Length: 322
Image (cartoon, rainbow, N blue to C red; front, side, top):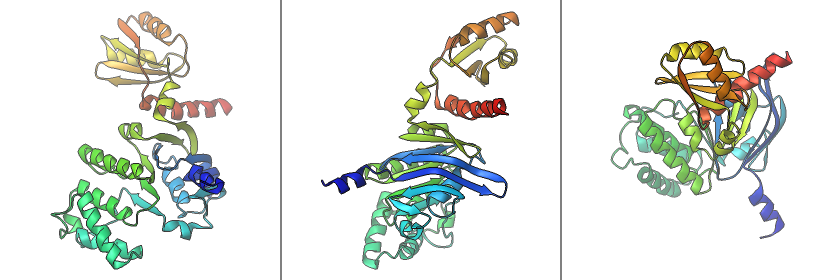
């Protein structure tokens, strides 16, 4: 392999530096640096209004950034957005389907939009009909499909031209858990075949499945890494509290300096601290001072803890700076 071929193989699918988008006085995306490796499922996690959708729209050339540099599949964006369009797929939570067309007619229309030759289009549609389990529903109107079936059809349409890169903007928010699991199996099949996938999600169980994750908060990138890297960084900062009066215990724990969050799960309280150290001892002391009997035990951090630490931790930093 020559050096140029090696460089192309090593190049990330997406590289953004200083990516910024302002709408008037509102900074929707604030100097985001992002690197997405090829053939990875890369997750975008963040609350509503965090800038996920705006970032995705800039990365695929649908929205012009206010500042920053973007390279997608080694193309400059937005300058080469038209060239990029043939090489990417895009799917949103609204499942952009023609409800008065059949399953097959939807795929035929999308193949025509992508200028796929008719003979190849027929072959490709037959492949997708089989792969996405529509063999007995080819003539069924898309509007009569279930939510999970519509989702599968929308994904089949998004990959009909076999894109190198697939953008998915909260694609599972309107379907049941079983359909979400099936959908993710399809995503890993695509990644195994070499497709790079950038997916935004609200669901922690989905975030755990991603090869890498970025967490956005109020337009800023506040965490980036593999799920294991992100959770390992919180070791020593998470504990569970078993108390006879869990609601009173929660009020006491929230008043302890350095506590970022307290979440009740069944009869236990899961506590996240702002920093490592003597967390368990301080919490035991506060509970005893309040006259509450409780057991305090360390617990392994999870991605929900990562999310809370990244978003609330950034809020605390902003407050200190102010």
